[in-house]
Length: 379
Image (cartoon, rainbow, N blue to C red; front, side):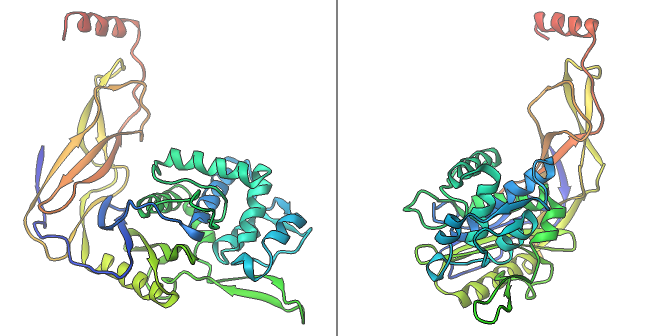
């Protein structure tokens, strides 16, 4: 264990919110800054649309889906998701050809239920097949308390549920895995699609994100509202290289969602501070390698690493490198093989990734034979 002098020793800064459910995580350090009933299963409402967008982003990255690809609005889909009883809409028309790019804007900015279903049907043929895909992605992301029955979070008698912690996991994965697509779609202030029935005027709708224009660095993600779920929001903002993800849910009004979201995110940036630990590429330790052409490999920071601490705290912290070892070869440079565990008084442990400094190839014949001999003699 390595002891480092650093500010700490103060309890977490106090915070209170009227939101029945709330969660905040600092992605720069992995620290959970606040959790209030964060593992309660709840209906996500339109926050479920983040998973629909996540899947589309992933397929675009893999080359299996193109932004200029066109999907047709089936008349049956239009009929189901048209009119006041169908909730938020992009104002699509039956038989209309719409690009994936425009559908994504319709989902992210306008929260269009119609856009979600058209995209889901275009990708997997039916919404049910797409929902099965959503559940596969949720399992892969570690969203252990989530299940999706449709693409847009429409109430379905409890089939679709999630937790604040799982929504934060999805939001974090979106920002980290698809930074360019995230930037291109999640911070638009408004989007224009469809025309009014009377005069045929273009319909422009604003983004409902309560942080945009109110908190510096705010750039996503998704609001949600149904009578059953109340008003919710999963949001993210970045200031000075420090990104926070927050979730609030079950709020009683549109305006309170705005005030609680802004207050929560501002607290996250103002009441906490980031303490730099390691610069990108800095080696802190080595890991033992099994059956490799090298006996060990350096453990380095994959990016600038910081620890999140209460503002104005003072004291010391403990830093420990942990990994399941020896690490079996082959190993690629940049592969995540260890973690830096940072503990401070009155705070949960913070886990920061460490990666291999170099490639390590498999051992040759004599190396494997020697390893087997040493194993036989109980080395």
